[in-house]
Image 1 (cartoon, one colour):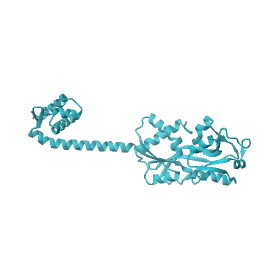
Image 2 (cartoon, one colour):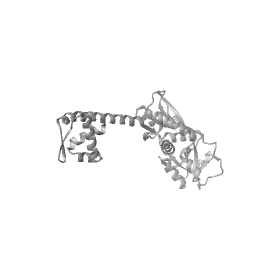
Image 3 (cartoon, helix red, strand yellow):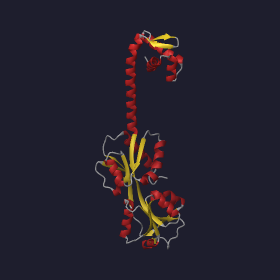
Length: 304
């Protein structure tokens, strides 16, 4: 007895026609007839009375139909539950700071796709590392990508280092500087500066560097997006301070240029994948971390 025979029996009973049953099952009418004939042969009694082009259930068929419908319904429910479980096991809720989503994730995602990993990823970007960590504490994400230098990581989380990035003073390639490089820091006060969002932890770090060196930059505009900062610099708006991961392509292409200063800007950030410190990690988290390990072995620096 096969499932295909039982499904053909149920649909034919509902439609009272082998032809219409074939249409609903997307098979031919002779195939329906054959399957039901095989089922009747195995059972040892007829299930249908053939009346012209229509069919009617025999008494045996009527008694059998209820139980077969129940069995198929239970089987379908079980298969749906198994499929939901498989999808849940593959689902990864990922939260990250925007710089990761813009400049790191595309290369990582291409690597994951090239390996054929069955991951179903939902990505949520948060404004800051603190918000990413809070998102994880609330159970809204399985893995968080953040700057661990800006947060106090609880003991129940572990961190896998992805990248140690630095920032630098930067300008449009054609923007003139007031003197030769390395440029004394005090000279930066004479140049218009494009600031990143000043309430953001990243720019607070920059402001700390300014305060330490008694600098009062001439900020002409403040924006909340690195891409807009870069666009303004290429249009000659002035200078800024940006993380290298955000400007790697522009530095390589020569559309932006680093400004060497004396003393230099010393600032390091450690971008990490943070995940729960537990042995029984969900399959999706384990798979993602293994993919990260493979990716890091091929891309130890800023991914191209």
